[in-house]
Length: 410
Image (cartoon, rainbow, N blue to C red; front, side, top):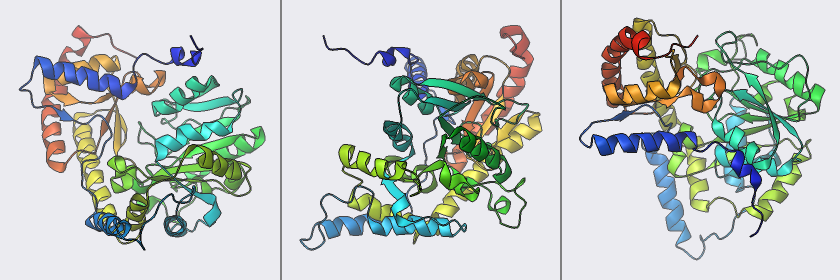
């Protein structure tokens, strides 16, 4: 028998969201009439902008004509979408060149695929807790992983260590799952650390569009200004790659499109183009026309949808404030991260059974997440309201029985 990748045996038995789905499916078999509401998996619920959908229809019609048909596109994306992305950065006074933009399938694909460019012996630093795909992609590649641990004490925004040699640094801001976001001043420390180590920062900015715009102005001092891009920091062009997506900002979870920015100064720029030429035939013309519309004609619609998700998060946090629950997030990201004080999976099972609500256990994002729970703001307003109407009495009962039924975490 051929040798297989032995690193697959080092992966956890179940991917986090697959395990959530399995437990929910088992519950529904046992209680088929139960009305379950999900505030768990971070999928969107609001439809595409009508302008974005129109752009897709127009592109499909164009493809049905001899003159307008498009076959394989450029490996790095069509210029019309790349120009729209360049202009999107200009709105925040960030200058990037057209050849620095690469259109991809989405942030998740970019996060995993870009590892093709690095040596298998590179040491990777990953925040904990964080999106599990970062860890799994590197485990599969056999790389050594060290962790920058998040905690209540550092606000789940870990800073670089005083010493230690690493080659690749993952940062996610606004963070999934904690909903926290780095300031420009905090990112300066990470850029300095990367430059000192001759390391590369892989910066996941998939949720940048959710940052409260009142915190992003150039007139705000760097220690308080929330960054929407790593390239707001001087020196980042010498050490960083930015990965972004239309999935959450424009509702493209079922459409699939994103982008990666790699400065020309980096050898990774031409390496990535070569990698894409080998392993990808690019994103469809129709999808890229839809993505272009998302940044141009449909952008106001997108901002209204984000505002709606943000209102859902505010509803969740208002209930938490009333109940005295310790939490992070809910302001600059569509996630609320709260302390339940018991094993995260035990809480998941208990809340599903008692309140018919789905959450995401924090331990699935790393060992520092145990005792914490992630809720998403991606459901509809009505379902979010109903969910929190169920949650409030559930929580009050949970507090009363917690010490009797569960082991309390410190």
